[in-house]
Image 1 (cartoon, rainbow, N blue to C red):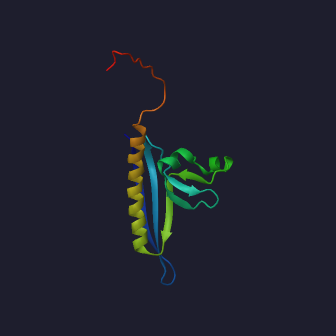
Image 2 (cartoon, rainbow, N blue to C red):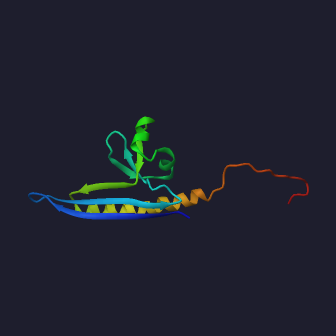
Image 3 (cartoon, rainbow, N blue to C red):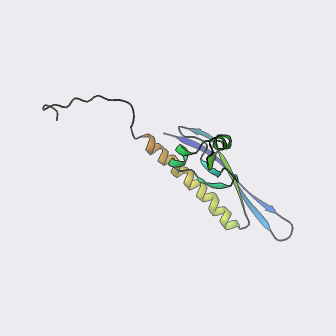
Amino acid sequence: MSWIVVNQRETIVAQQGSLTEYTVYTEVSDANGIPAELFVFDTSSDAFSSVALLWDIESWPPSKDEAVRAQLDFYRGNSCERTFTNKEKAAAFAADLQRRLQAVRIDWDGNEAVAFGGEQTFLYSSESP
């Protein structure tokens, strides 16, 4: 069974005038049985795209350098930061990240539990059940 340690920091920054920014920083600081790089980013802009799905973990490399060398559109990282001007949207984003990180961990465990690969020998005869 896999596990991840997630650190999430929510900060409020008052700017000049009436604009207030709400920043959500989330990091997978440790992981066991699953890669810690669970956030997907656009290679050309470094913009956060999503929390990785199983397909993303298998398709995108865990560093921008690897993605650039392979000419891939996306890469994975272990942390993300987004800033909002609306507190409710920032809070919803933080909660969604927590839910989606747990969901991908559960999906990863389910996928890893499916036995596939290797070699087996079977004997079937008229005496087999």
